[in-house]
Length: 202
Ligand SMILES: [Zn+2]
Image 1 (cartoon, rainbow, N blue to C red):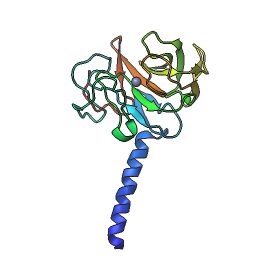
Image 2 (image 1 turned 90 degrees about the vertical axis):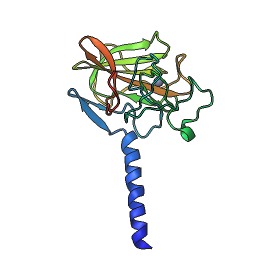
Image 3 (image 1 turned 135 degrees about the vertical axis):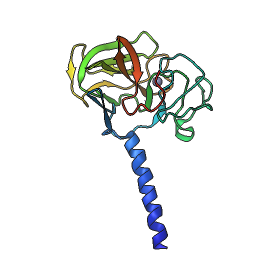
Image 4 (image 1 turned 120 degrees about the vertical axis):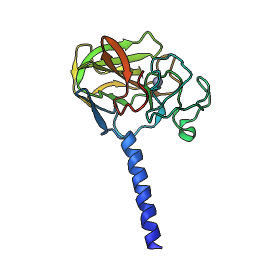
């Protein structure tokens, strides 16, 4: 029995480690010289993917998650009773960020060193947002916030608390953080995925 138990245990450990690495706060990947960490401490559940195919709220009939996998079986827009715990992360066509479930007033952390360029009400339905400029053409955005702990012009280090999470704005269905990373290419601001862009380029 022992020689059967050990491989199973090893598989469990490998799967568990993979799950943790996908969510833990110490994961970070370099992009263009800017290294991003996750914008919170501990482990949070992913509740909605970035649409890697068309990450600008435009609907093109395709939803591509970070693995490059096309999800043709996404539910229709804004399902009222979607449960990410039992049904997995929600995907919707054109989502331009990643949603992480967290209680209101959870500290939101800077994903990379940068300068605060915006802290206020975002006019496109996401409630209170903070935007950080990381240099090298990168910026990150944090929305549905309850409040801010930084001011415009402030220089922040990676991991510094910049805000309190919430569910402000018309797009929030329950408390969560909407996190976006952007890369400016030839003066055009594209949504990107700092944790591994393996889907199709826009
Ligand atoms: Zn979102």
